[in-house]
Amino acid sequence: MDAFERRRAFSQQRVAFLTDLGEMMQEGKGSINQVLNASARRTPNAALSAAFRDVRDRVNGGMLLHLALQPYFRPMENMLIEAVSVNSKTDAERGEGFVTAARMIENLGSTGAGVARVLVDLVMTLLSVGFMWLGVAHFAAEQFAQIAPRRYWPELSRIVIGIGDSLVDVWPVTLGVIVVAVVAIAWALPNWVGTRRRWADQRLPGFRLYRLVRSTPIMMALGTFLAARIGFDRAIKNLLQRANRWEAMYLEEMLANFQARHERGVDIVDVGMFDWQAMVRVEVRSMGVDIDEALRYVAVEAGPRLAALINTRTKQASAGIKGVQRVLLLLVAAAIGFVYLAVVQNAGRSF
Image 1: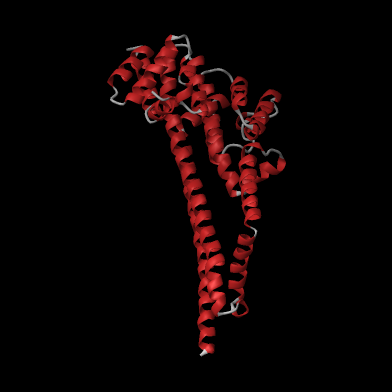
Image 2: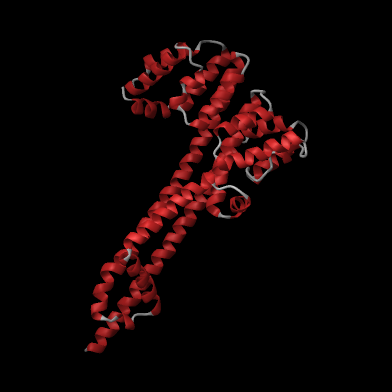
C-alpha cells in the first residue's frame, strides 16, 4: 500500500484514534497493540488498515509511540504526543494526556481549515481581478479605441486601462515582480525578526493573523509540556528545538525572562506572541496558582476558545479580501462603462 494513501487515510481518523487510545489507557482495559490490532482488523478501509499495521510494527520494533506515529501526524501535533508519551509516569496519566492532545489537535485542525480558506480567497481574488483587468486592457480596449480614440476617454478609464496595458506590454517584468513579492512574503512570515517585525505583528493584518495562527499551537504545546510536569524552562527548550526563527525570537525572550526572574507570573510569557485575550485568561487564572498551572489550564480548557477566535479572525480576513475584490471589480467595470459611454458619444458625433 502506497505511503501517501496510508497517511491520507490515517489523517482523517487520527483524532478519533488518539481519543480511543487515551480513554482505553485511562480505564486500564487494553494495550496499544490491542488497539492497533483491533483497528487494523475491523476497518473496511485497506489504506487505513495498512497504516494501523505499520504503526503496530514500528512499536513492536522498539520505537517509542510518538516516533511510530510521526509519519501520520503533523510536526506540531507530534510534539503534543511526544510531551505526553515521554513524560507521563503511568498509563492513566498517559491516557489522560492523549485525550487532551486529541482535543487540541482537533482545535488546530479547525484553525488550519480557516487559514486555508483565507489563502484560497486571496488567490481567487487576485486571479479574477487580474484576468479581468488585463483582459479588458489588452483586448477590449483595442476595439474601443478604433471607435473612440483614447483622448476622448474619461480620465479614470485612461488610467485604469492604461496601467493594465502597460503591465501586459512588460508581462515578463510583471510576472517577475509578482513572483518576487510572493516569495518575499512567504520568506518573511517565518524568518523576519527584530523590532520592526514585532511592530508588524501587532499592526499589519497579514502578520497579525500569522502571529495568532502560529502562537496558538505554541501555547497548546507549552501547556501540554507543563501538564507533563517537565518544568517551564525545559518546555521552552523543547519548543525551541522545532521553532522557526520568528517563533524562536519570542520563545528565547520568555526563557530569558524566566531565567533572569525579572518578570513574574504572566509577564514571563507576555512578550507579544500570544493574543491579549489569552493573556488575560492566564493572568486571572495565575492569581491563585503559579504560572505553570495557569498556562496548563488556559492551553487545555481555553483551546476551543482560541480556535474559535482564529476562525473569527480568518472569517473577518476573508470578508475583507472579498470586499477588496468587489471594489477592484467595480473600479474595472466603471472604467469599461465610462469608455463605452465615450464610444457611444463619439459614434453619435460621427453621424
